[in-house]
Image (cartoon, rainbow over all chains, first blue to last red):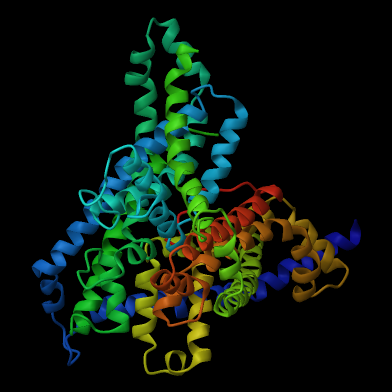
Length: 298
Length: 259
């Protein structure tokens, strides 16, 4: 025991003598983050307030008001909102079904495992899967045609609603992964307490269950919004990254290979707008999750 | 049974949504030869030299990403738990930033900021940017995995024991800490692997010959091969996630990824 104690005192004196050296231990991490994330992002944010001659200007921000760009943002916001609410609803109900819905335990485990895979199965291959399913030659399209329902040309996988269906495929599993633990965190005693006071099932959900889950549900929906808003590959594969540039991420991507808007400052402002919207949704999510953590402990 | 109607109903809706596209893709991928089911699309893909080249390229990139990410994260997480616990929220904040800065904005910022430097003017430089971006994307998973792993062992006692036997920091990290957390590290590594192998946005915008851009280009010339690729890609993702669950770390909610 004696040698160990001896080392301890030695070590603490060393710690005191070289307090500033303690910080060297985390320097590689901060240098890496600075070089590959912070500096590039901050420099883009800064440059969106500079004109071509590097003078301060709000011109780039004002030019975001161009109808073409506004319509891109609106399109992306609508796409993200529809798929966040649709995917959130379906994913929430699925999470409910496999947890407190009382389905057999193996089904719960299977859905959770599958969600882990499906939430990571996105981008180019996901687009391929849906082209094989609901594209013009897709299996489901052909099958519907054989029973007399022709999807095309009324529907198109490459339209707004087509994109929604594809996005929801990666939204549902994310909702399931976050909401299943929240449902499981609801305590049986709450329900028993409510019932012993004479509440029926509806009253329990209206006055106890839903208020407790609401921050969690809203928070995750906001997260799904951001998840769809930042998506690029899936939309790119489906729309061919065409110059119609409906989705905002495709418009930003097009600024790298060719300065499609013929204005570098505007490209920077586009990225800034994106960071602001993503920042708000991630911040809102964090805040709402903290609210719900007060009640739900797994 | 009637009481369980709605849970079963929603389960079936979810299962349909999940499985129909997979079934359809599998079905489609087997129809390359008219009038019969065959693996022709798979053979055609697997024999394509560009498939092998791009797959190997992404494999190397994924391994490099995992190694760099581990080299940065393990000492950082260890040091923060040992000496700077109050810094943990700061580190967590920085590792979560990739959710605020989507891949397309990240690659846009990197390409603009480092334009006309060796990083964007040479093949090697672009690859460094690619691996650097992937390492940033891997941080949320790696840090959480390693941090959890470190919490389950007593790093203070292990460190003191090693020091009392005369070990230096490098020895402690490589021969004491690393062997104790490599299972946790593996779960971070597999999710990183899954993300890098299917990633399209960053690789395409940095003009890298990776697997994602290869899949994208294939769609313009082939009909059945893309669905064979989608099945292969799904199997790959599934294998990576299964490996994580096999190693007992459990899949946590994941936000980033090759969307």
